[in-house]
Image (cartoon, rainbow, N blue to C red):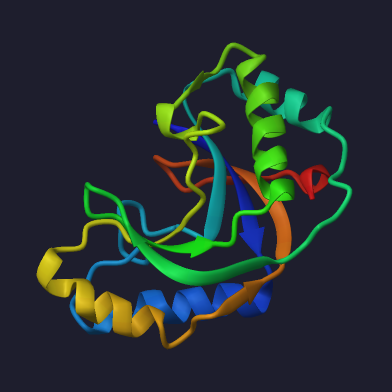
Length: 175
């Protein structure tokens, strides 16, 4: 199991993303709505930990100062990783990069094992729509995603998410 440190979206943005997930499912493309445990929430992950001490990670994150600004996320593009995960791409700001780097420093400082794709400088922020898209389904995903893009998403909170179970532990001090 992995543990992710995630930003959660405000209610209007969460509804919009969930509508995309539902529409994809109706069109025969699996989304995060039905993936694994089916308890996914729309999110942007700052870190994914392969091994960790939960209490130490949570404690380290409570030591981080609140961000100076809590700017909304601006999603205006669609991306696809090599292993077929399709996602929305937010505008990458200096504030977002610095916040991700500070989260990584905090969790790595506990001895947690960070997944290589979340190393600052390699991290590509994304909001997953469909975890396993076949090339033939890409036009369906693109058409559905562009029905809600551009999407301005406020950040409603942060959380630790157990990716194996979908269990969420809120981190109100991170936003």
